[in-house]
Amino acid sequence: MNRALILATVAIVALVLVADHLMAGTIAGGSPASSQTFSPTFYKDVLPILQERCQSCHRPEEAAPMPLFTYEQTRPWAEKIAAAVEQRMMPPWFADPRYGHFSNDPSLTAGQIATIVNWAQAGAPAGSANDAPPPRKWTDGWNIPQPDVIVQMPKPVAIPAHGEVEYTYEIVPTNFSEDKWVQMIEVRPSSPAHVHHAVVYIRPPGSAWLRHAPANTPFTASMLKDPEEQRQAHETTSDLLLVYAPGSAAERFPDGMAKFIPAGSDLVFQIHYTTSGDAARDQTSAGLVFAKTVPARRVVTLQLNNHAIIIPPGVDDFRVEVQGTLPNDATLLSLFPHMHLRGKRFEYDIVHKDGSIEPLLRVNYHFHWQLTYKLAEPRELKAGTTLRAIAWYDNSKNNPHNPDPDRTVTWGDQTSDEMMVGFFDVGIPASMDKWQFFIRNTHDEDHQEKQ
Ligand code: HEC
Image (cartoon, rainbow, N blue to C red; front, side):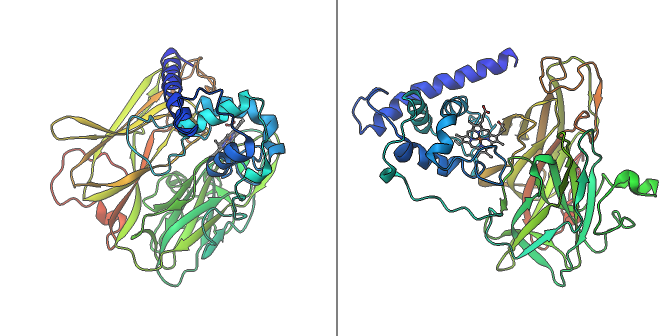
């Protein structure tokens, strides 16, 4: 960890401590209570926080290693839990709180952190089970309501025990006989521990993309015969249905907005598997909940990319920037930064005409946690608005994730290569497709935005 990061952490802890004092007073009923007079117990004070902020992952078949439902399950972890929440490592969230407001921000309040820390310091008392809140109900399998359609990769992918795995594709026809609007989406690998990330594309019936590749069976680009098609595997104008990465949640678009899947489309699963020492099989599914009525707006996923990254060896704060102007009016909904192991920070800004910068999101990037940041208030952006993304990379030996600090690093699929992608979702008129959105009415300067 470098000095700047340590300083930032210290600053946050200091803020929390000051605020804790205030909150502890409030919780104890307004008396000027010190932390000694507030003695939280598991059932009364801690369990409600676990239900609200932790069990979404800390339950069977989800990402986290241990369930946090009962006192017996939680007690042995008390100290680690206190440390994780105090350092704001859990629940995972990496946005700088000074910029933007996000509807999916799971951060604990200073009061909740104080409750957990005080509880752990007091020896993690159980208290009375009569004080426990009713158990929170979790649906097995899905975090969205029962999907209208589940599209599963028909053939499992065999993941080897060791080594790097080339991106794996599986094309699955939807057989939809009519157009569909998708309000909620959840992507679930059957072997989440082996999935670094997955992208599900919507391939409309007219698309030439991977047209000669087989359907319903896994393949990689190097298995394709046509060199042109091998190259194309990584480039498509097809819209994304969803990007899945560890920690990423199910997608629920605001009312009146949905993703569009034309009749006869295929879903193309593109999955980056990682090995763990044990061979495994994965059969990823996408669960779809359809909109009840035709929405006013279509959600499309755009991206600000910079492929021309050349990160010198040893450099600990290498900066890469990209700008693009919006070809048409759009409602900005969410942001999803993507880098690999050397990724350090990422930011999105609006660059106003007068040159002033309006930060939308600043993230201390963590490779193992690729999150979507959903704007608490969708933001109307006019055609011609300039968006900017900046990424910083740490290619020094001080980066514990760096596989090789002596290498010059360029764009590539594998995690030992790098990427610089600022995904963002926008709402556009329902009748407009992604191609039409990129048609500009006015003659614009730079057009660096990629689809
Ligand atoms: C988005 C999913 C998610 C949420 C929400 C979440 N966790 Fe975790 N947690 C994980 C995963 C995955 C791991 C294991 C990998 C890691 O440590 O990063 C983990 C690890 C932990 C650990 C172990 C750290 C260690 O030292 O080994 C603790 C303690 C913990 N979580 C507590 C919590 C608490 C308390 C909450 C709620 C306030 C919470 N987590 C919310 C996913 C989550």
